[in-house]
Length: 89
Image (tube, rainbow, N blue to C red):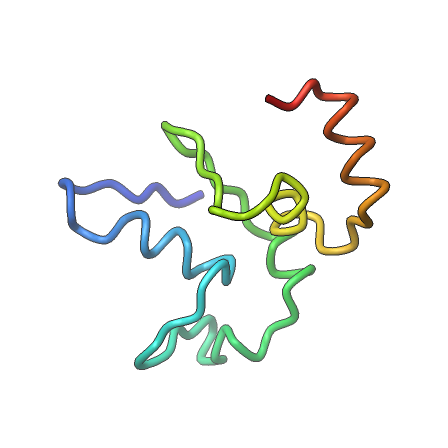
């Protein structure tokens, strides 16, 4: 288990967004056991990482788009079901 802490503006959110590859680095590379993270497939990588935030994090896309960030296999009908079952607001 790893905790990322630091003052405002230190890059905590950037780091936490880069590790599960919500974004890829514009310059340089993030290495995991000397392997470029961009060469890892998304689904196993995201299954291996858990992020617990103090505040909610949503991307400026649809609810379905946010669900697909976590569940890459999520179809439109499955996203609708999740939305309804969880009373998404």
